[in-house]
Image 1 (cartoon, rainbow, N blue to C red):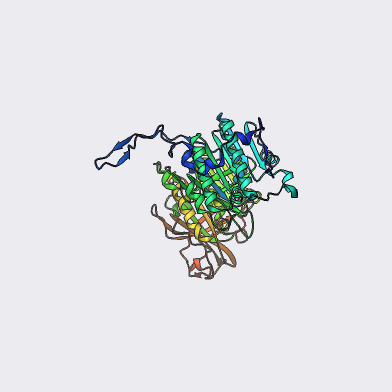
Image 2 (cartoon, rainbow, N blue to C red; image 1 turned 135 degrees about the vertical axis):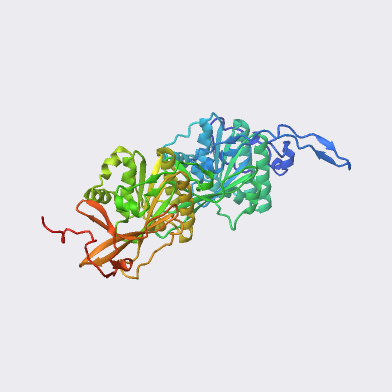
Length: 560
């Protein structure tokens, strides 16, 4: 019984395409295709004779490597320019990790550059691909879609093969249809989606590997840059395919108990090219995949003029030895509600008033509450937001990956000339991480990067507990900060008061005293040194003098 043809849906002439294709037996002998193994050479190197009589090839000079932009934001940065042309690349990932989206962006980028592009699909229909493109607001005009799907007639009993295994016939027809379309169109970019269908048709691993090798040599001889998509549905991990491909990009999603999945990618290999190693966060949004390259602070060295940022509060600047030095990081450590965020915003307002740009990433407090609270203390935050000099970003730890946050900070640094950065708080940043062990590494790179740019960074950490010796810090990052400003509650005259002191400052001298902090009556004030108290930082100080050095509150102030 003659085999039933697969239905091929493509643009252009559809008739007699299988007969015009190369035979599958040619694929089983990759070396018989008649092209050199290394397509990067303009011609085969000359054969020379060595002193011992052996025949060797002269190395010659290779042509400059031309790279194709992927069209994916951030991915070309990781690949240091894009994918080298005329090679075969593998994109691996579980279903839902964005393989098809990346493939479409790759082909659309080729169309924008005037290159012919071909999308071969074995698993999805043309209608499904168009629907995916529409969801991103794209048009696939200019991209040839080759849909290879079994005909409905194959489901009938009389269509079943009795002599040959059905997979052998279908494999032959599928490969022939793909090669015929490539011969007709002569595309520069090709996407093959997906290899799982081809693996099922091959049945045996040896046959599957030989078919992939044959396809690789066929495409290389026709100056095609090919993306193979694999959804990793096969049993076990297929290392054979990775060894054949010129480059491998792995996509994965990390499940979290609450919030969105954390998606990340890794370039497993890229022959003959440098790339940024490690995991890089990415997200799928309307408009395509957006990749956030891992921050490497050593790539952003910059010499800056030393500066000092003052708070506008004379006593606080005196406590810090004149102010905060540019390029340093300051940790504001203390219980909840003791004034950490307020002092940080005070520095940001001072910077903005001098004409610089400041940014605050708020994990815990809503922006509306922050603006209202600042207004009550004489800080007109809204005015500076409207001027564009003060950037406030409400961060949802369940919806934002650490890589995306670092990327946003980099954009502010490079495009807005940022001078003050506030992270409020590190507790929220910690919750955005899948594991606490990565927090110190992320912070180290971020602080080094902004420090090399001369930016003053302020980070708040809310400690557990309020008074006494039961105060605990959820994460110890004090060793990463250049300056540590400690806040404490203490009791005096029947009131709960606040105190602050500088524990360390790497960049210069500072006072080692303890001063009272008062935030009342529409202003922020720092008092004189609390010399008549011992044990203020414990929350239960011992008094051995007069109370005259304490700032008078509204309830104890004398009437005029």
